[in-house]
Image 1: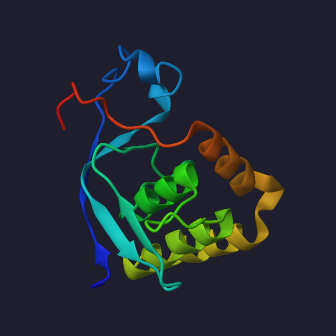
Image 2: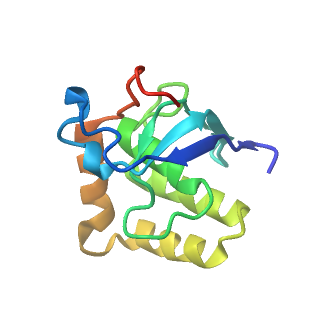
Length: 145
């Protein structure tokens, strides 16, 4: 796992973002804040860097296992790798599969691989488009990490 640098995240406290107008519409959807940068060089040679203060909604619909969801959320919300090249929904999904596999979440990795390839009833596609529309959000500077 030498190409996977695991940062840190913490759970948001209930109502922690409620008073911030910049996040007024989205604050209820976030579960975690990145407190230490994550990075990963994927099998496709692309690097993903998830910066501090990035807000994540976790593995929507699944248990939050390991850190694969952090990278997945970043790629879904930005649609970009660290070099600013485009990351497709399928690539983001397969990177989540890669990282889940590295972290020994084999069953989850197989399930996500299946979902990425088949996208049953457009679940992944709709989530990708919604995340792209919203874009990345960050913890306001006046809230302590």
